Image (cartoon, rainbow, N blue to C red; front, side, top):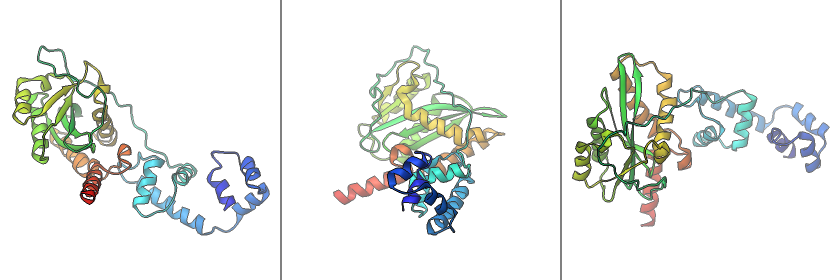
Length: 294
């Protein structure tokens, strides 16, 4: 209906201009607003209730209208993203703000061998286990710093391996890599990309890569954009998990990592670059599509 169209887009174009373009009167539009709520209004009240329910759930309270819209569709609500944006604006439902994420690179001031940059910021993978990205970040606890290493499959953005430690050393990155190798099967032609940190350039890590036939790639010195998808994951992890917590111990931080990665990020979090599905769902869909066309 024309009146509903005007209401839907009143934040985009002036009401007077819309009414003139649609051939309706402003007085008629305002009379329409005063009528008893019809099916559309009742439906939108249901949508608002669902938005509030989702927004009140931890880790979903930082969803803006695009992700909120996709989650509503998954929950069986038929609506457009403009409607969701308008309702969130009218109800003052805002995405949770967090402190700014700071990108840190590991120490590359060493004399160990450096691998060439095989990606050159071309972050495209046509299949699983074609390109993995890895990096290290830190988590503050009251006991001290806990270090986290993750391995991310570029194809689906799924975290396929991770490990925590009180020490930032080669053992940490090897543990994360071995977990990924155990989880995934075919590694033929696999490229593993990281920064130039001494942990990744160490002889022990080089031997591990050689043992499983993994080709190594490294970013340019101090250039976090050469590993952008991995840094993006850490930003999400810090904003949606770490900055919300006050960890007492290393073990508590590790439990937080496990819950975030294994339960939430891989299986529930909607990823914009994957068409607003989770990494696990993306892999399942593509596997089914390939089986259907085989």
